[in-house]
Image (cartoon, rainbow, N blue to C red; front, side, top):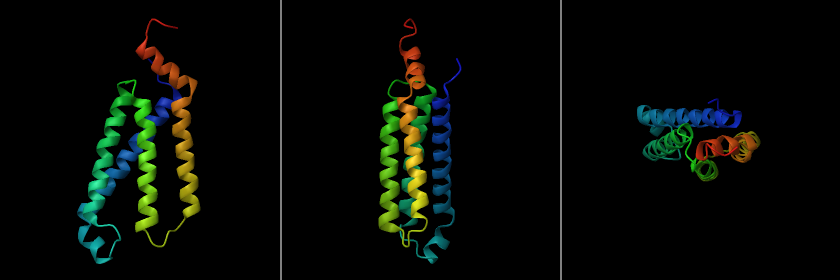
Length: 137
């Protein structure tokens, strides 16, 4: 069965976030000495642990979307909200100075709106309804 556009877009967003956090883990581990030399505000161990945590969470989310689980939409919303909260917490408390704040706000809002409409769109609901109740239509 062909997937709806919101489901496909959501999968690509989740894969991109997995890749981003995997790079974060790799960077924190392999560039540990250089990052300490330049006095990064958040420790490299904490950065690696947080990145690894998000890789695992987003892999579970990706798997649930691929397997067409009924709880994937709720996990998508809660994961997006949690990731946004953590991103802004790190940015406001550990990053100084905070360059490109307007750009970060616009991109973050754009991604959250995309996630919300992917969750709420009729094609997404129909996509999940066909999986849960194949005889109804």
